Length: 358
Image: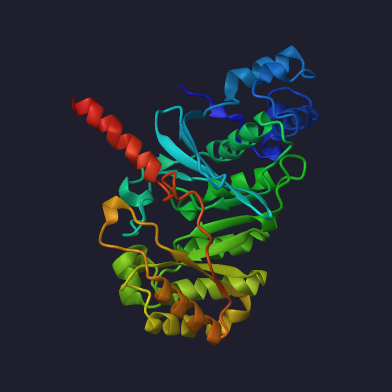
């Protein structure tokens, strides 16, 4: 039976576990320091721990449960990792360079059941949730990659926008957020972390109640129920009215700005009338809203969609701006390395299945 990742424990959970297993409370701080400050890859390298503690940790946990299957680097500096998990499943993680720092996009599930019709992630259905340790370890592997370059660079921002629906793996997501935000560890500021959801309204209430300063992004992609249901089946369970009620609760509870992600699909949701409807939908929230317009990245499996024309993107943007909605067009990165989320993973699985049939 595979051992779990040590990265899955928050500091308080690690402390409680060590005390329960006969170790002194201060050992947790030592282990935490070796993991997140010195960033060792083996319990044997934790030099100020006694042998009993090292053996105990080694018996129950792993430091490394992810292996790099493929690593691709884009001309713009974006690096995409395909990781193999202990059970053989594959996930993707992406390192992006921005003028404000280094951002990592992490995955929370093996596959996705949300079924957005434009998304490469959902081509392969959900196999399982990732543990909190497997999510944290994506960040640690990227940080180890940066450390190996000898440039003293560190991950400064996180976006939880990889494969899967983060709020469908809520408890592990929350433990992940607490680990990476902990000031004794990686100390990545909550306001430098963004979690994206396709609109699980019930979990938005729970997320608001946590009191975290983490940013929230909503994948909206359409301003009315008919169109949104057509391209996002999650809208059947949580139609726009329910979603907006949850968002109102979140805004009232946190007073934090929400980003609305809107992928522009040619002749589907990119008309001026949809821009007007979106502005109307957000009119009473515009002081705490930002719309991120995303040019569609075509995926061969979803060839019914095409990227919007530049003129349509400009008209959509201008229409929102003229109605007082803060918005921008997302800068593309990694277009030369299977940039669509889930694309590299699905290609590798298809190759594997093809070889098995031969």
